[in-house]
Amino acid sequence: MNVTSFTIDHDRLLRGIYVSRIDHVGGEALTTFDVRIKKPNTEPPIEISAIHTLEHLLAVYLRSEESGIADKIIYVGPMGCRTGMYIIVKGNMSSKDFLPYVTAAFEYVKDFEGKVPAATSKECGNYKDHNLTFAKYEANKYLSEVLLCIKDENLNYPG
Figure 1: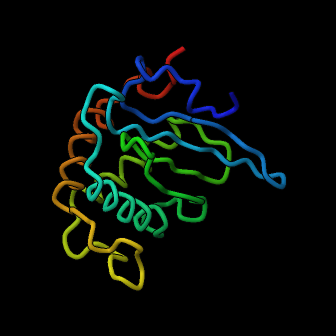
Figure 2: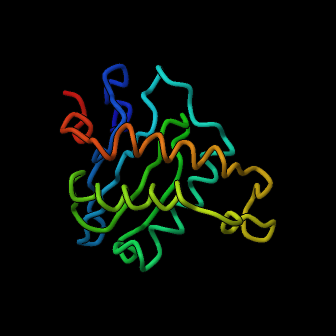
């Protein structure tokens, strides 16, 4: 099986930030991060409209100059299982290197006020399906329970 994420023991996987894979494209390294917000098969997955809003807010923040990493962000999107997000960045980065950027992004979501960016019919294929309240709740929960007290076991896939 060559799908890296399917080779990870999800029964032992904790919430955290993991390097899912590093690919090389045209001489450039691309690091795919598994930003695991929920413990697989233990916690309920993130509600669909909340993960959709997380996707919009995380993408907007990480691609902004304020993030300090805008020029490296390639992709931000939800996992089909709704337990986290995949974020792809240019360069070879470790989970520990990426931690401050993810923490700042989730702080942004937690504190966000106003209309969800790019949530109109012209900008989004399912613009009515957003939930800012739940997205902020999930961001705050992940911050307080994982990111702000992170341990090595939350930065390295289980063996």
